[in-house]
Length: 258
Image (tube, rainbow, N blue to C red):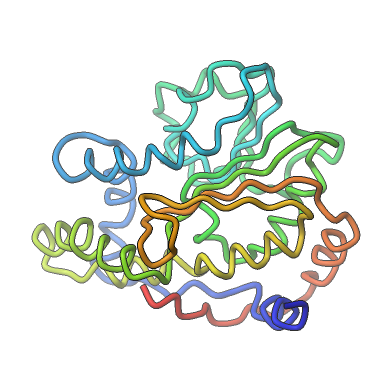
Protein backbone atom coordinates (compact mmCIF):
# COMPACT_ATOMS: atom_id res chain seq x y z
CA UNK A 1 0.00 0.00 0.00
CA UNK A 2 2.82 2.40 0.93
CA UNK A 3 4.44 2.07 -2.51
CA UNK A 4 1.10 2.62 -4.26
CA UNK A 5 0.44 5.79 -2.29
CA UNK A 6 3.94 7.08 -3.03
CA UNK A 7 3.28 6.54 -6.75
CA UNK A 8 -0.09 8.25 -6.40
CA UNK A 9 1.52 11.26 -4.72
CA UNK A 10 3.75 11.69 -7.77
CA UNK A 11 0.66 12.41 -9.91
CA UNK A 12 -0.03 15.66 -8.01
CA UNK A 13 -0.59 18.51 -8.50
CA UNK A 14 -2.84 17.80 -11.49
CA UNK A 15 -3.89 19.88 -14.49
CA UNK A 16 -7.59 20.42 -15.07
CA UNK A 17 -8.67 19.67 -18.67
CA UNK A 18 -9.86 22.92 -20.34
CA UNK A 19 -13.51 23.61 -21.14
CA UNK A 20 -13.59 26.14 -23.98
CA UNK A 21 -16.42 27.25 -26.28
CA UNK A 22 -19.98 27.18 -25.00
CA UNK A 23 -18.92 25.18 -21.95
CA UNK A 24 -17.11 28.24 -20.57
CA UNK A 25 -20.25 30.36 -21.05
CA UNK A 26 -22.52 27.84 -19.34
CA UNK A 27 -20.21 26.79 -16.53
CA UNK A 28 -21.10 29.21 -13.69
CA UNK A 29 -24.82 28.99 -14.36
CA UNK A 30 -24.73 25.20 -14.33
CA UNK A 31 -22.80 25.10 -11.07
CA UNK A 32 -25.26 27.44 -9.36
CA UNK A 33 -28.17 25.47 -10.77
CA UNK A 34 -26.83 22.19 -9.35
CA UNK A 35 -26.38 23.76 -5.89
CA UNK A 36 -29.60 25.75 -5.68
CA UNK A 37 -32.01 22.85 -5.24
CA UNK A 38 -35.00 24.35 -7.02
CA UNK A 39 -37.52 22.08 -8.71
CA UNK A 40 -37.45 18.95 -10.83
CA UNK A 41 -34.11 17.21 -11.37
CA UNK A 42 -31.96 19.71 -9.37
CA UNK A 43 -34.26 19.15 -6.39
CA UNK A 44 -33.97 15.36 -6.76
CA UNK A 45 -30.17 15.52 -6.89
CA UNK A 46 -30.09 17.94 -3.93
CA UNK A 47 -32.27 15.56 -1.90
CA UNK A 48 -29.88 12.68 -2.56
CA UNK A 49 -26.83 14.83 -1.78
CA UNK A 50 -28.44 15.75 1.55
CA UNK A 51 -27.13 12.39 2.77
CA UNK A 52 -23.58 13.75 2.46
CA UNK A 53 -24.50 16.92 4.34
CA UNK A 54 -25.88 14.85 7.21
CA UNK A 55 -22.79 12.62 7.32
CA UNK A 56 -20.37 15.50 7.95
CA UNK A 57 -22.30 16.85 10.95
CA UNK A 58 -20.60 16.64 14.33
CA UNK A 59 -21.55 16.40 17.99
CA UNK A 60 -24.37 18.50 19.43
CA UNK A 61 -22.03 21.12 20.90
CA UNK A 62 -20.49 24.36 19.82
CA UNK A 63 -17.51 23.78 17.57
CA UNK A 64 -14.95 25.64 15.53
CA UNK A 65 -15.66 24.53 11.95
CA UNK A 66 -13.85 24.95 8.64
CA UNK A 67 -15.67 24.06 5.44
CA UNK A 68 -13.67 23.44 2.27
CA UNK A 69 -15.22 24.53 -1.02
CA UNK A 70 -18.33 26.01 0.54
CA UNK A 71 -19.80 27.06 -2.82
CA UNK A 72 -23.15 28.78 -2.33
CA UNK A 73 -22.92 28.17 1.45
CA UNK A 74 -25.69 25.60 1.14
CA UNK A 75 -24.30 23.48 4.01
CA UNK A 76 -24.41 26.31 6.57
CA UNK A 77 -28.10 25.75 7.57
CA UNK A 78 -27.25 22.19 8.60
CA UNK A 79 -24.95 23.43 11.37
CA UNK A 80 -27.06 24.58 14.33
CA UNK A 81 -24.34 25.28 16.93
CA UNK A 82 -20.98 26.78 15.98
CA UNK A 83 -18.61 29.19 17.70
CA UNK A 84 -16.63 29.72 14.48
CA UNK A 85 -17.66 28.86 10.93
CA UNK A 86 -14.86 29.59 8.47
CA UNK A 87 -14.96 28.59 4.82
CA UNK A 88 -12.58 28.23 1.90
CA UNK A 89 -14.18 29.25 -1.39
CA UNK A 90 -12.26 31.07 -4.15
CA UNK A 91 -15.33 31.55 -6.37
CA UNK A 92 -16.92 34.75 -5.04
CA UNK A 93 -19.78 34.61 -7.55
CA UNK A 94 -21.10 31.55 -5.74
CA UNK A 95 -21.37 32.93 -2.21
CA UNK A 96 -21.63 36.73 -2.52
CA UNK A 97 -25.45 36.74 -2.67
CA UNK A 98 -26.05 33.76 -0.38
CA UNK A 99 -28.67 34.30 2.37
CA UNK A 100 -26.34 32.33 4.68
CA UNK A 101 -23.41 34.75 4.34
CA UNK A 102 -24.01 36.42 7.73
CA UNK A 103 -23.52 33.11 9.55
CA UNK A 104 -19.98 32.71 8.22
CA UNK A 105 -17.08 34.02 10.31
CA UNK A 106 -14.42 34.29 7.61
CA UNK A 107 -14.06 33.41 3.92
CA UNK A 108 -10.65 32.45 2.50
CA UNK A 109 -9.76 32.06 -1.17
CA UNK A 110 -7.27 29.28 -0.44
CA UNK A 111 -6.55 27.02 2.50
CA UNK A 112 -3.03 28.43 2.63
CA UNK A 113 -4.52 31.87 3.44
CA UNK A 114 -5.76 30.67 6.83
CA UNK A 115 -3.61 32.02 9.70
CA UNK A 116 -1.18 29.42 11.06
CA UNK A 117 -2.54 29.75 14.60
CA UNK A 118 -6.11 28.94 13.50
CA UNK A 119 -7.35 25.47 14.54
CA UNK A 120 -10.64 23.62 14.24
CA UNK A 121 -12.71 20.96 15.97
CA UNK A 122 -14.13 19.80 12.66
CA UNK A 123 -13.06 20.31 9.06
CA UNK A 124 -15.71 19.34 6.53
CA UNK A 125 -16.34 19.17 2.81
CA UNK A 126 -19.30 18.08 0.70
CA UNK A 127 -18.71 17.08 -2.93
CA UNK A 128 -15.39 18.96 -2.98
CA UNK A 129 -12.39 16.63 -2.69
CA UNK A 130 -12.94 15.17 -6.15
CA UNK A 131 -12.34 18.67 -7.57
CA UNK A 132 -8.99 19.48 -5.92
CA UNK A 133 -5.96 19.51 -8.20
CA UNK A 134 -3.57 19.36 -5.23
CA UNK A 135 -5.58 17.02 -3.04
CA UNK A 136 -2.72 15.55 -0.93
CA UNK A 137 -1.52 19.00 0.14
CA UNK A 138 -5.03 20.10 1.14
CA UNK A 139 -5.66 16.92 3.15
CA UNK A 140 -2.29 17.35 4.87
CA UNK A 141 -3.02 20.96 5.78
CA UNK A 142 -6.39 19.89 7.18
CA UNK A 143 -4.64 17.34 9.37
CA UNK A 144 -2.29 19.95 10.78
CA UNK A 145 -5.14 22.39 11.52
CA UNK A 146 -7.23 19.91 13.50
CA UNK A 147 -7.33 20.17 17.28
CA UNK A 148 -6.19 17.14 19.28
CA UNK A 149 -9.66 15.59 19.38
CA UNK A 150 -10.75 17.04 16.03
CA UNK A 151 -12.16 15.22 13.01
CA UNK A 152 -12.06 15.61 9.26
CA UNK A 153 -15.37 14.63 7.61
CA UNK A 154 -16.11 14.58 3.89
CA UNK A 155 -18.81 13.48 1.49
CA UNK A 156 -17.73 12.54 -2.04
CA UNK A 157 -19.31 10.87 -5.08
CA UNK A 158 -18.46 7.18 -5.45
CA UNK A 159 -16.44 8.13 -8.51
CA UNK A 160 -15.29 5.09 -10.49
CA UNK A 161 -18.21 2.92 -9.40
CA UNK A 162 -20.96 1.60 -11.68
CA UNK A 163 -23.98 3.17 -9.96
CA UNK A 164 -22.38 6.64 -9.80
CA UNK A 165 -21.44 6.52 -13.49
CA UNK A 166 -24.91 5.33 -14.52
CA UNK A 167 -26.63 7.76 -12.15
CA UNK A 168 -25.08 11.03 -13.34
CA UNK A 169 -25.51 10.08 -17.00
CA UNK A 170 -29.22 9.40 -16.48
CA UNK A 171 -29.86 12.55 -14.41
CA UNK A 172 -27.58 15.59 -14.66
CA UNK A 173 -25.99 14.39 -17.90
CA UNK A 174 -29.30 13.74 -19.64
CA UNK A 175 -30.81 17.02 -18.45
CA UNK A 176 -27.77 18.99 -19.65
CA UNK A 177 -27.87 17.40 -23.11
CA UNK A 178 -31.60 18.05 -23.50
CA UNK A 179 -31.16 21.71 -22.52
CA UNK A 180 -27.92 22.48 -24.38
CA UNK A 181 -27.25 19.72 -26.90
CA UNK A 182 -23.81 19.24 -25.30
CA UNK A 183 -22.17 16.35 -23.47
CA UNK A 184 -21.89 16.83 -19.70
CA UNK A 185 -18.91 14.49 -19.68
CA UNK A 186 -16.69 17.42 -20.73
CA UNK A 187 -17.65 19.29 -17.55
CA UNK A 188 -17.26 16.16 -15.43
CA UNK A 189 -13.72 15.54 -16.67
CA UNK A 190 -12.89 19.21 -16.12
CA UNK A 191 -14.25 19.18 -12.58
CA UNK A 192 -13.61 15.70 -11.20
CA UNK A 193 -9.87 15.12 -11.21
CA UNK A 194 -9.81 12.62 -8.31
CA UNK A 195 -11.50 9.21 -8.03
CA UNK A 196 -13.03 7.96 -4.80
CA UNK A 197 -10.36 5.25 -4.45
CA UNK A 198 -7.63 7.89 -4.69
CA UNK A 199 -9.31 10.09 -2.08
CA UNK A 200 -9.74 7.15 0.31
CA UNK A 201 -6.13 5.99 -0.16
CA UNK A 202 -4.68 9.45 0.55
CA UNK A 203 -6.90 9.94 3.58
CA UNK A 204 -5.81 6.60 5.02
CA UNK A 205 -2.18 7.52 4.41
CA UNK A 206 -2.45 10.80 6.33
CA UNK A 207 -4.79 9.81 9.19
CA UNK A 208 -4.56 6.94 11.68
CA UNK A 209 -8.30 6.41 12.04
CA UNK A 210 -10.53 6.43 8.95
CA UNK A 211 -14.15 5.29 8.65
CA UNK A 212 -16.13 4.82 5.43
CA UNK A 213 -19.87 4.79 4.79
CA UNK A 214 -21.66 4.55 1.47
CA UNK A 215 -25.15 5.34 0.16
CA UNK A 216 -27.49 3.71 -0.72
CA UNK A 217 -25.60 0.37 -0.42
CA UNK A 218 -22.22 -0.37 1.20
CA UNK A 219 -20.45 -1.62 -1.94
CA UNK A 220 -18.66 1.05 -3.99
CA UNK A 221 -20.17 -0.13 -7.28
CA UNK A 222 -23.66 -0.01 -5.77
CA UNK A 223 -23.30 3.40 -4.14
CA UNK A 224 -23.79 6.97 -5.27
CA UNK A 225 -21.94 8.68 -2.44
CA UNK A 226 -19.20 7.90 0.06
CA UNK A 227 -18.67 9.51 3.48
CA UNK A 228 -15.25 9.67 5.12
CA UNK A 229 -14.50 10.30 8.77
CA UNK A 230 -10.84 10.75 9.73
CA UNK A 231 -9.07 11.56 12.98
CA UNK A 232 -5.59 11.48 14.55
CA UNK A 233 -3.59 12.87 11.63
CA UNK A 234 -0.02 11.60 11.20
CA UNK A 235 1.86 14.88 11.59
CA UNK A 236 5.14 13.65 10.03
CA UNK A 237 3.41 12.49 6.85
CA UNK A 238 1.30 15.64 6.63
CA UNK A 239 4.41 17.78 6.90
CA UNK A 240 6.26 15.66 4.34
CA UNK A 241 3.42 15.93 1.81
CA UNK A 242 3.28 19.71 2.15
CA UNK A 243 7.05 20.04 1.72
CA UNK A 244 7.25 17.85 -1.37
CA UNK A 245 4.55 19.85 -3.19
CA UNK A 246 6.81 22.91 -3.42
CA UNK A 247 8.16 23.42 -6.91
CA UNK A 248 6.54 20.32 -8.44
CA UNK A 249 5.30 20.45 -12.04
CA UNK A 250 1.55 19.84 -12.52
CA UNK A 251 0.67 16.53 -14.19
CA UNK A 252 -2.33 15.62 -16.38
CA UNK A 253 -5.34 14.59 -14.34
CA UNK A 254 -6.08 10.88 -14.03
CA UNK A 255 -8.94 9.00 -15.64
CA UNK A 256 -11.70 8.47 -13.09
CA UNK A 257 -13.74 6.33 -15.49
CA UNK A 258 -16.71 8.63 -15.01
